[in-house]
Amino acid sequence: MASEVARRYEYSHESILARLRGAFAKAELWVAKHQGEVLGYDWVVLEGPFYSDPYLSGIAVRESCRSKGVGSHLLAFFEENAFAVSDRVFLLVGDYNVRAQEFYRSKGYVEVRRIPDFSKAGIAELIMFKRRTVATPNQSLEPTGLASTPRADARVAPAKPVAHH
Image 1 (cartoon, rainbow, N blue to C red):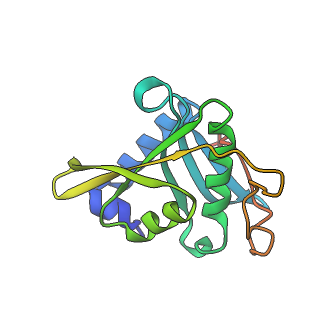
Image 2: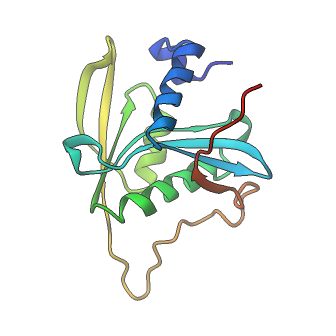
């Protein structure tokens, strides 16, 4: 079953695989696994827009794993790596994807601009931005809520080749 994003942008299964293979070839795909099961992935461009600031091209979480902390875990992993090289991170999210917008806002992202018809006619892309914050002595920047989720022990790492038979 295709995701809402794939349906909205009319991506075929083949085009999605081609895009993911390209991201994999550039080491831009980071996968979350639990006991060998793929739960989701980050598509990350560390030298993203403006050739300096990291860009989160996308997060995808298996439907059965949504609302269990996997997306938060993937985003935290992205930010940990991205903020090691920059003070700012960016992402785009479709105007129709209210759930994703709320998720990113809850993690400190703010909308800075809308680009109408950027990827597809009739869909505006929201540019969302986050600046690294510095923890005060009484504040932790660790992601919260992960320890109590069923998938909290998922591990995220750069994708590795999969043998095709």
